[in-house]
Image (cartoon, rainbow, N blue to C red; front, side, top):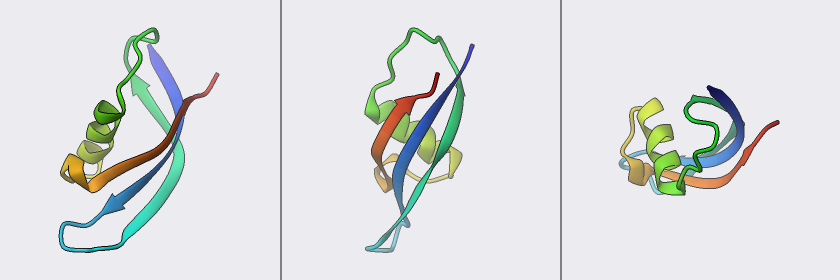
Length: 65
């Protein structure tokens, strides 16, 4: 089942000290009853942007109904 989430997060480049902030709707295909851990969410976002998970900082994550 697909679930939509509103998210805000920071992306840091490997060699940069500053970060870019992004926000928007993310759609995932997973069990709707499963609660995702923030570390899992950062990993998914990092994978999407082809970055290491430590370069992503989750600020806000909430499910849309």
